[in-house]
Image 1: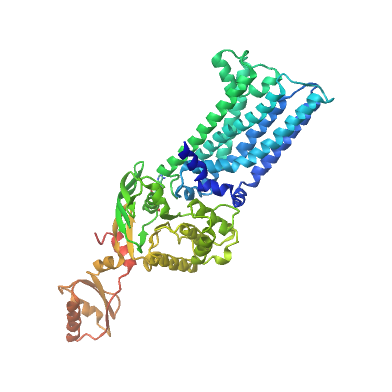
Image 2: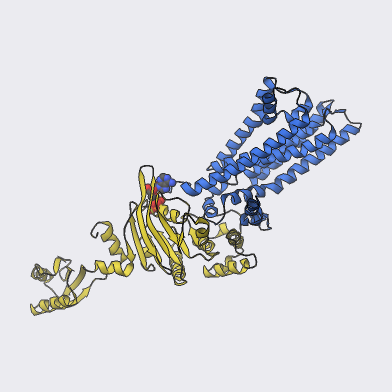
Length: 278
Length: 309
Ligand SMILES: Nc1ncnc2c1ncn2[C@@H]1O[C@H](COP(=O)(O)OP(=O)(O)O)[C@@H](O)[C@H]1O
Ligand SMILES: [Mg+2]
């Protein structure tokens, strides 16, 4: 355990560089299109918040959770989709693979490169949402109905955002490691995330596995929560807090497994080579 | 010291590298010659630990490439046949990044970056963006990147391709310099004259097989068992040719003009002198009598057309 920690963090030269000040110039490579996508995400998010508040008489506090979730998914995917596929496209990946670093170290460095941008975006969107929700709860603006206690809302907001980010990072890194082009990585990432977060939630809803109450909105789109409910056949009785733990736990675990699988993909590339030469 | 033993690699039914073996000593510059698709890149990638061989092994300074991959990677500088460049990064940042990846201590990095930049002649471009460099400079930057961790083996895959003659000459000088620094250098090319003058060992690969390899001098000497004599006369070259026909040391002779004759000759130096005396005694007026220099290019042509081996 200690050795793994040293390998991945304290003794990881790629990571050190990624976190040192020079990395800014490397990070600059995370192309303009990514920044545009991030800006669009923020605008859409703001638009959603505003229209949600204008259109409804009741606002459930958990709507903010749902939105920060939405943002953390998109932000993570946008920052990471090109990280390995882009190296391959630029044909610079071999330069990393011939270096005396393990593929775990490479993948963790890539992950870390996305960490601060994602964390800051998620924080920037989550905290105001939560505060806004508090203001709404106590203010004289349109009535805000909260089925869940406010503390749970805040914990859920941060916990789910982070866990979801990690999970999405895993999915994205794995697909980035499996694709040869950034466009391929982007397409497959978006398709997978749609399947995971929208399609499965839709199926769960149409089969009646999830409540339609607004507070459930935040947890139930998670396929893992739906799954727990199906497995235990108690989907109406499982309390939100328990669903939350399952949700965060599964996201974290699966996220780490996917990151590990991305590193194994690179390891394979080291063995089998990555392309037929010209 | 690099020892390569029976490396093999197939892609499906295609045998890309077939039982390649050779040895290099420190200071050796090994010209790895073969036409496109001969298996040079595949061999080099296996030596760079980027591709596992199906069979065979290689060891660098006593360490097995597969079992001690991490240590070996530290002793290898690999320059691929393309320029894997990050956009939007300055020359020194690029080198600094790789110095970090190769665990060069932070305090030594700035001076190492300066040193390799000076070695490849890019000091003035330190703050330029890497993508703004000319192809020749990018190639030198790429070479500088291979040098930041002071490797003992350099694998340069077609470093001169796409360069203009001047940039090519500069690169050659640089590679020769690296050999003098005691590094082992493997440099591949599909164009032989590119390598002829600065390699001391060569290997010629054809369809995955290393058909000949060794010291340049040895290979040339082997071939010189059939040397070519170029003889000029005032006239009657044709008649002289008839006269030499049937001589025990003359394999064949070709009249290449009214006054010149080429002779495929197998004898020793004494026989060579005797042949000249015979011609003069017979009354042929010889104006020049010399051994045609055999260079690597002749070796290449002879070997690849099957004239040798
Ligand atoms: N990853 C690969 N998959 C399939 N075939 C390959 C691969 N890499 C190389 N080859 C084939 O192996 C042969 C040797 O290629 P290569 O080593 O690149 O030759 P060279 O570098 O001498 O031009 C070629 O026929 C090439 O098409
Ligand atoms: Mg090649």
